[in-house]
Amino acid sequence: MSTQPSLENIVALAKRRGFVYPTSEIYGGLASSYDYGPLGVQLMKNIKDLWWQTFIVGREDMQGLDSKIILNPDTWVASGHVTSFTDPLVEDKVTHLRYRADHLIKNWLKNQTDPKLSEIKVENLSLTELGQFIEQYQVTSPDGNPVTQPKDFNILFETAIGAVAGEKSAVYLRGETAQGIFTNFKNVLNSTRVTLPFGIGQIGKSFRNEITSGPFLFRQLEFEQAEIEYFFDPDKDDWQNLFKSWQEEMVRFVNQGLGVKLENLRWRRHSDAERSHYSQETADLDYRFPFGWDELWGLAYRTDFDLKQHMQHSRESLEYLDPHSHNKIIPHVIEPAVGLDRLLLMVLCEAYQTDKNGRIFLDFKPSLAPYRVAIFPLLRNKPQLVDQAQKIYQELRQSLPATYDERGNIGKRYLAQDEIGTPFCVTVDFDSLEDDSVTVRERNSTKQTRVKVKELATFLQK
Image (spheres, helix red, strand yellow):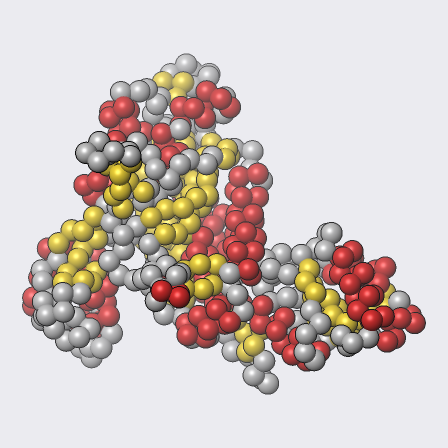
């Protein structure tokens, strides 16, 4: 049984079965942009709901939030994004196409045979070092042309608000959801009376003017984040213990919640050069994608950087008053932040299976699958079978995500449901009219079992 699909396999199935479509495809698409189809949007909702239940509703020390995409522009000045939210950009001197310097070098290294070059950690190189490397080894663009020296390129999306020309104000589409949490810190304190340590989490859209596109859902102009800022008193809670605890929680969610094998996960610590300006310690939970190991979920110890910055620029106190000692402190923060689009891509990659007969199926956990069950009449031209199948479908869909299908032959219906990851298919046949039983086919094994209709809902919940 194959467990290593190519990215091309994933992309083809995602479009064919209605998980993911290229954005604006009828106009030629838009770089680094994708839409979720009927099954994709349900899969994404299931992932979101599981994250929210696990990390917000399921914990007594968490609060939820939903801040706006467009914030006061001073927010991004205070956070450092206006000056420091950059990627290293180079330009092909002939075609004038632009590339991210570190990605260009990584791809160039893949084609080199010198073992010393293979040991180079590109993510550890500064902007100057990237330029020196390009010059020393004469790194070229994918078209074989020389490239410019790298320069910082700010990836914040800038726009404007205001209806009258000359009176517009510059604003930014948020590059992360975190800043809406920090600017609402005081409001959450005052309205909920929470005590340290506690976290604030939210799910929402973020935007980055990425230099490099793709691959597929991994890097997009518009993406969805699930982000937590966990506030604590550094004199009472050791940040390293909290950091380790969050690492364990993140792995548990991906492994047990999303059904991903531990062998496909690893931790990678950021170097000093790679780590963001606000972070004292950062580690990435990486996943083994079809295109190699890459970041899935980031964990950062942001110290008190953000609250201090916003206090300085807004001149508002964001201190926490300890209810026992009555001391005022500025809490420190640990941040687990994940791109939900990457979680969805990972789930598709992990679930994609091909058995010895060439049958393709998505081995989703039942709780994640867009549909838990599909209901079929054996034949579509037999009203009594259709009526009974419809009756069962209407009853089941009140408690389970279910779908109904009577197109084509039964074999093609099974294969279609396998490819969208439906765990069970229920077929109403002529015996069903006599014994009030149906045939239940299990997705992975294709094993078929006769089950009484009155016991069906319980059976499908297993």
